Figure 1 (cartoon, rainbow over the protein chains, first blue to last red):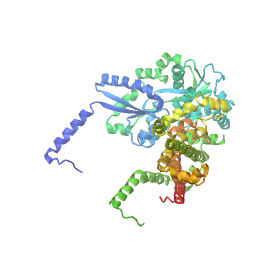
Figure 2 (cartoon, chains in turn brown, yellow; figure 1 turned 135 degrees about the vertical axis):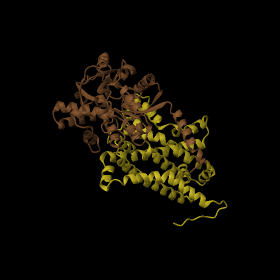
Figure 3 (cartoon, rainbow over the protein chains, first blue to last red; figure 1 turned 45 degrees about the vertical axis):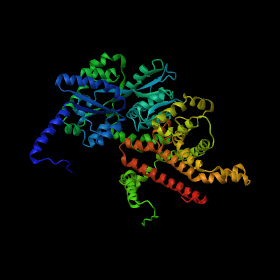
Amino acid sequence: MTFFYIPKFLKPLVIALGGLASTLAIAETTLLNVSYDVSRELYKDINPAFEAQWQAEQGDAIKVNQSHGGSSKQAQAVAAGLEADVITMNQSPDIDHLAGLGLVAEDWRSQFPHGATPYTTTSVFLVRKGNPHNIKDWGDLAREGLEVIVPNPKTSGNGRYTYLAAWGYALDASGSEAGARQFVEKLFANVPVLDGGGRGATTTFTQRDVGDVLVTFENEAILIAGELGKDKFDVVYPSISIDASAPMAVIEKVAKKRGTEDEARAYLSFLYSRKGQEIIASHYFRPRDEAMLKQYAHQFPAVKTFKVEETLGSWSDVGKKHFADGGIFDQIVVNK
Amino acid sequence: MALSRSYSVLPGFGLSLGYTLVYLSVIVLIPLSAVFIFTAQLTWAEFWQTVTAPRVVASYKLSFGASLGAAAINGFFGLMLAWVLVRYSFPGKRIVDALVDLPFALPTAVAGISLTAIYAQNGWLGQYIQGALGIKVAFAPLGVLVALVFIGLPFVVRTVQPILEDMETELEEAAASLGARRWQTFVFVVLPVLWPALLTGFALAFARAVGEYGSVIFIAGNIPMVSEITPLMIITKLEQYDYTGATAIASVMLVVSFLLLLVINGLQVWAGKRTGRDR
């Protein structure tokens, strides 16, 4: 339907004016970074630093906007058409899902160093001050009568890493799948509340005083122990844990359409820069930069970690085996 | 289907019926039919397996059981509250009247978080209930019931209240002067008039409770087979990109809710007929 009649000879002019107007309107480029729930604080610091650097180097203004939420929910929003230029998650299945839909390049892992993961963290224990139940390692979590707080592995990346860390530990300790399964079953029998996400579990443990130990990401545990109550909680490092590297990717389809491919790539590369790595370390995530890791060594005790892909198989196989409907997690909680 | 109309002094039957049908289609029928269309992508065997998985079945029991329980509790106390608000006058009555609607206005997540904080083992009420009585409210199925009672409170009160206001006390006086005892007056004179409204309130409270997610999720504890509600099972499926599985469970919920509401509606018509109020 045409609302205004435009004489034919004026059309080129109108188009030119329209073009000019739209160039003026996008004088400031914007990027949208869709991220998971607890990276809010990190990107609040990363974005201004990147914007300043981009302005200094390129002379153009850029603004990075953020969207946060449960990781799978966020990936779903992107799949459903949320125009994100980049996605930064805490587990790779969410990005694989987008790659499967053609939004992200199939080889997204090889586009940036370290498998496109600019930082890593791991699952650790948070116990009440003085560690009254003497919890030292994964084996202790399956002890009868202990209450363990873990977010739901079905809905939370954090919970998924905890489950797999426990599985990996028991697989190593018992030497058999049956042993691993038995251990994980005992551990989850000790879970009185399954929160939907990491922050929910934190609240249950710290605010409601439920549970003897909270298993969560190192960055979350340090944050709680340091800022919520220095005199209330201790962080305990198990003998072995899981490598929870945070993957990210450019949403090619959107970036191409919006003409922001260079900016999106520069933004993700910035995470690997000195400045980016320093901000990451200051938020208690383990940086990739060796020198930076050394500089912050006081907050990152050495911990032995294993990678899901190397020990347990590809993420999609792990997902099907453990977390799909009727998978091992379902069987364990139903039999309980 | 033949359309029937009784002659009215106001015109516009065709127009308003047309608008009603379009409105209902856009707002209710099209979104709901999408649920069934999505579900239809599953084979019958897949559908059956999804909706009868042990965890899902346990969640039906909790969701429908707690919703019926909460609606019944609200039916009893809602009637009492409405009675007090209509029949007696006391200082602060207007404030109490306004308080009734608060569960409507409060975001459900806020309700869930506050209820959890109060009923948790270290909460104001929870420490006594759990400490002295040994009853666990938060992070247990009982917590689900508490949350559902909270969000369903206004329905019965608000449906019964206007009927009670219209009811003439002369009826009760007549019953009393004819020799009816107090309980007889209540059961045979007052209650029959209130039944249809009470059932409507009950049905509304029930329907709201079945679909409730926000407030329950914080207090339930979400332990598989014990305290998972059906809406959580749907969300869990969605988070795993299992859209058809999610809609399959949703369609079961819809059908069961529809059947239960139909039964309640039937009861209402029956109760209405019995008292001569043809509705």
